[in-house]
Length: 112
Image 1 (spheres, rainbow, N blue to C red):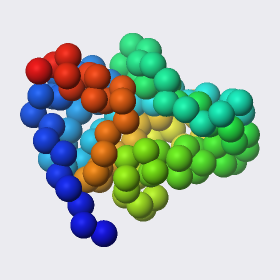
Image 2 (cartoon, rainbow, N blue to C red):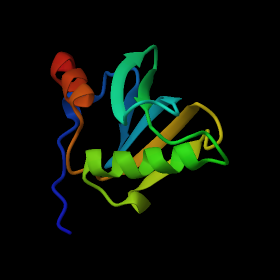
Image 3 (tube, rainbow, N blue to C red):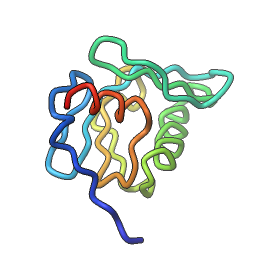
């Protein structure tokens, strides 16, 4: 799969995410057992992400990673859960995303 690099210089001022080279790093406030999978609003320095999976032995986190892989246009293996696999508070690293969900685009456009 050919990857298109996303220009990130205008996005560096956001409080809930940052770029580490070509890796997008952001904090998540997870909401398991929701009615639908969705990326919500920023709450403090975290992005709220709801998933339909139940919070049993990391299944909700695994489901979240699969959901986000599609949202960022990457393989599941390109998303790393840095911490919080069994907690609602998490940090994720997305290697070379090919697209950005709306909340990231909005943060970038307000930083420019």
